[in-house]
Image 1: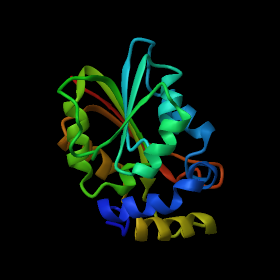
Image 2: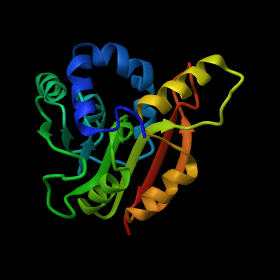
Image 3: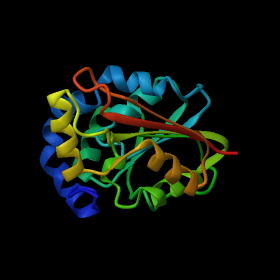
Length: 210
């Protein structure tokens, strides 16, 4: 557990970083090229309805909208959502908690969540809620922070590991698989990737519904 994987703390954090989130935070940890590669893991089509959980300023939502028919984004931070609404007028953005999504069962063909699980106080509850709103045969992609073995021979990786452990929720491969299974997902795949400065920074999990 980290200092920012709590709703109030995360909301306060985004209130402060929202003005420079896209140019600094997103491009450092979840750059455009990485996000596009992540979405390649989902076979989205023009008829699909996609949910972006923890959508922030809408960057991932916009990439998903290039591939899918309809995209909805949810986030707890109103400053982040305000920026998303100004930038991407074709997407519906709602303020909502990942553990209490304002949608009926079996609404979406796919769920994506990039860089949001690191703030979730209860990842299993959020994953179960995502499972509830996903149709049979649907899919999910979640990218968070990996917890690599420490120490590493690369100083920047050691620095990132220490900071991430202190501030955010991080997970290992076994933990991610166990949590997705507990939330009711099937065909779980978990591996690592990341930006050029830290290719093991991100743990990416995909799964499907039966």
